[in-house]
Length: 314
Length: 308
Image 1: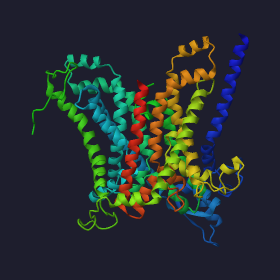
Image 2: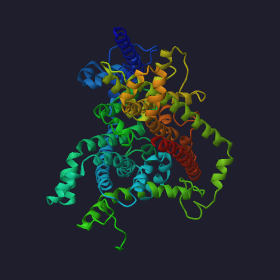
Image 3: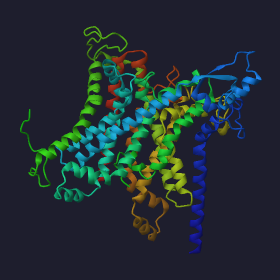
């Protein structure tokens, strides 16, 4: 018996070690990109890459600003150097540049935030009500409607993108916040309905029936009984919808040029513009990936349900 | 306007609900219709429009004048598509890509899920770290790997002990680069669904097999695999559908230059927005859509069989 137990313990240890090594290897690309964003300008193009260096935030400043190089012979004087702010001094010391104005990233980041927050709110409003309707009432042809809702989600974005581009051009919605918000709502609401219906199905009907007997109207029962009980589900769904909208690329790329452009549609095309500034590209990537990473960690208990559209409940 | 139709609302026995029926009916309409209308306006109507366009010679760049642009061309776009030998290359490349990436993800994801059944300290952290790539933006993941795989300064070649191999820009290799990144990104997806499937396998089956001194292989092939098969199929369906329409990842990793791999979504994009043959692009999009629907409905049939 002791032999068996020992074997089991050894096997457990081996599996743990294998998994830990695998995970470390798996995380290397992420580590590399974060690492690159903190590397000083002079070190970035070293090969093989150095592991130990003086970390610098200059790349993050560069991605947020537009700069101009000091022409030769016009370097700042001692006095000017003293008067510079810390940020300006960091940039000057690393790349011999002065900051001209705020760059393009802040506005793209703001666009991403506005579009994602608003579209998530509208999606959840529509999704919760529709899910409640489908969950509680025997709507005619319910399964067909639910399947119709799901199928709209499965359409490849490039194919929907063409006619939407033409339609938006006709009504002047191309490159506008409203256009992208509408599109994101339409694309995510199917997800929200399916997942939220699962959550609402799990709330016993008896609570509402009791409330109805007590003289609540249907709507009051929905607002005061169902909504409070499904807060967790709604929150998890909202986080998922936000992540989807935050990550969306195809529509943003096809339908926005400037005013409403989001980060994913902008960042990949900055390599040339930034003069192959690797540090800045890495810094932008790092900043962009942080929100979904944090949200995923918060979501970890609802992940399976979300990625399977509510088909798998655990 | 209000015509008398059959009852929209019925109770469990199929009778029309008779206390305050209108109130519930109106509430359901208020709750359900906005979503349906939005989907029809933003998704279905444009799709039908592009179906019409695929039978014309429309170009989105030119001024629209009915009768001139677009002009009705019948099935000319479709005929041109099927007689173009290039198109088969695109289908084959996309198929190859789907097979390689989804195959890799299924094997790796299921393997990881099996290993993660072992309980040990730090398992939770490993789980959270492994699922991170899945919720990142594919285009940004592509950009990230573009830096990582760069032939001059990237770490990928250095770590594998390879020379200065250009993964992202060399047409002979960039399809494999996309496969590698796709596997990196979506293995967690298969892993998560497999874990859900494995946790639902009743423990007593293993105990019974243990009593019979069944081999590891017997337990795996007769208990584990059949019990998790439906969930593996769900994972497969989601992954095949997604991989077939892949667009973001190659755009981030390779870009839309001439060296880009001949994948279907990329072709639809470049026909529509770069050479401005909008209706040709729409026609290709429709063929793609039909293929996706065909593949998924076959898989769903298997899924329904597996559930019974």
